[in-house]
Image 1 (cartoon, one colour):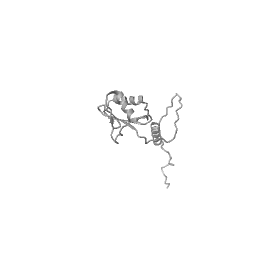
Image 2 (spheres, rainbow, N blue to C red; image 1 turned 180 degrees about the horizontal axis):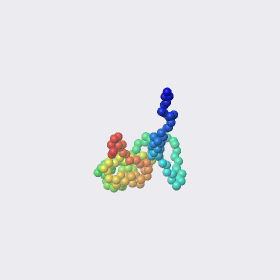
Image 3 (cartoon, rainbow, N blue to C red; image 1 turned 30 degrees about the vertical axis):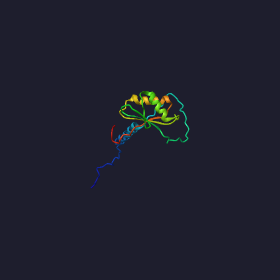
Image 4 (cartoon, rainbow, N blue to C red; image 1 turned 90 degrees about the horizontal axis):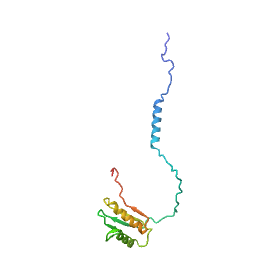
Length: 143
């Protein structure tokens, strides 16, 4: 009696379709998350700056603007209307130091014109190191 095995030499095969799916998914992931650097056609030579340490603790001149449009330079309220009164108060508080950093702290509801007026007055006086103070967003809020 002959006992035979119905399996006639199992054909070993590798199913590559799941492998191709994984590779295409990885390819799409890398393509979508990579950064594309676009080089400009205009070639520019960037300016150079010294790497010496700067005094980052220099006292900044603070200009505060409330939501009603009143200006305060340091702790002094600007008396009078217009840009000239603001320039006089800034010049009195800053002295001759035009390299001093200036921080503009404006209320969130302050009209843009008031902030631009402060920036214009600082520019006319020769200040170039301006910054606008903000508060960071709280994590988890969209605003």
